[in-house]
Image: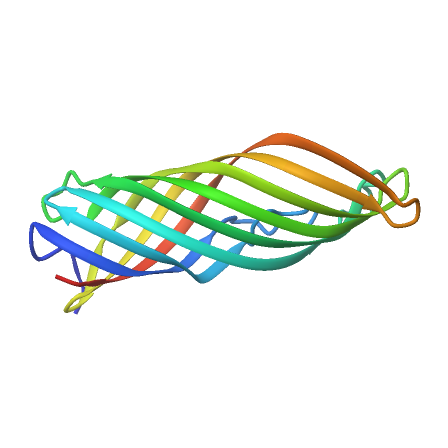
Length: 203
């Protein structure tokens, strides 16, 4: 029988991120830097003392997707992208409720992303391949619920708003012209994220 909260003022937990929903709408019009759904791709640790908790996590995702705009977008192209995504971060959480079943949290993470793909179409009729390397940081702020499922097992659904800042270096190659173009830029993105953690009490 499930219940909310924890059984003591101190609690060590170790487990996995069962599910991450990075987008609530499936966008196939542009190249995405992460998949819409991620399953069992992260390790999650949490140490709770009274109403405060320290959190740490790391994750890796390897995903492939294709993008194609509507036929009415004559100036847009189509293609595919393959992402290798690594993240590691720490954070904290606080509960206004003594048993800690409802809490607020903030996670700060370093992110490294390597992407390859191909792009064709558009007004100029391009057909290019590309490589991108990204380094950056993310801040995820939100709220969650800590639910005691069975003995030392907990599940924690969380909803948050993620802000991502990364520096991107890229290279585009045109196979027909044999031309390479190198460029770099900063990228700022913000989106809502849903997570589900499964943890085991280890103390």
